[in-house]
Structure formats: C-alpha cells, structure tokens
Length: 50
Image (tube, rainbow, N blue to C red):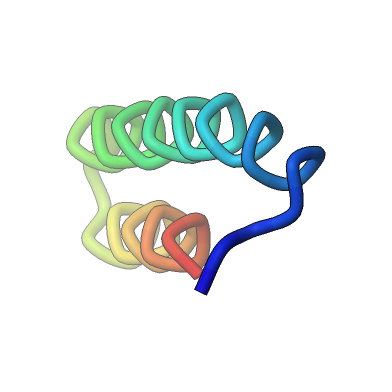
C-alpha cells in the first residue's frame, strides 16, 4: 500500500526525531545513579518507539 504524498515526506523526519529521543533517553538513564531513575528513562525511551 502506498502512503499519501504528504505522509511520505513527514515520515522520515519523524523517525529521525524519535530515534534521537530514544538515544537521548537511554544516555540520560545510564547517567542516573538510582536504578528506579534509570528505569524511568528506559521506559520513556521505549515509549518513543511507539
């Protein structure tokens, strides 16, 4: 199935932004000392993938 033209051009920048968000949240999580803080950022990163 083909995407409409407008959606096709908006998809790549959105994927780029969400992948940057995932990486930033994982990095932020690794920088946290307490494991619950770390988990919170990992959950946020996982939510960015949806």
